[in-house]
Image (cartoon, rainbow, N blue to C red; front, side, top):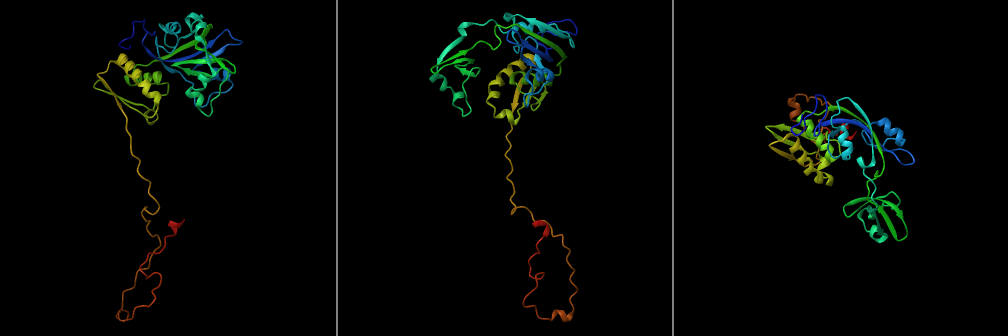
Length: 298
């Protein structure tokens, strides 16, 4: 059990436990049930027709009682037993909340067109487009020649939700806990992060992909806070290494390959040969220049 987890019966989870979670979550109330999220490839395949490229479907790290799901859903996982599958329905108020008409706002088309995401070459404005306005994310619900109506309610607000959950195992190794927290907060697989814990000091080596990712800069403080709470280290160190690549050698700078062509051993000079006049035009093998290596021209 982690230092901050609450007491729970043996074999069951407590708020603050780190686990691997397998789940599927559906929103009811529309024309047909809509998939909110899942770790199961067969469920996603059935709901979407084809799996999104590059997305993994497998049990994911999860902090019981955390903020990944709405509070009502998180509380349903507290006390669940390892290996137990839970099926449960949640009223809108216990899931993504009731819809608030005050969160549907009207903007001028001119104001919307000035948003950074609408200045990209591939930008489009249509019903369903997600916009970030003054730090809030909303979904476009109507578009006219002069006005755009944006809904800032959560996407599944006002809808009943049903889900299936299975706690696969509990994450207890401190290094694996750190990786799990990175994945939870950063939203990307943490296998590339190298974690070492020695003398109560956590050292995290940051991979190249994260070094230049603005999202990592915003998520790192939350990783620090979670790691402090989870394992109470003396300190946390982030190591970023930038290796200068060695210049590539050009063909002219490359070392010459040894001549593989056998050369004849010169015969011992006779007294007659020593007094013979030198040739006026030496042959190609006597000119002092090395023969061309066929292998170097291959």
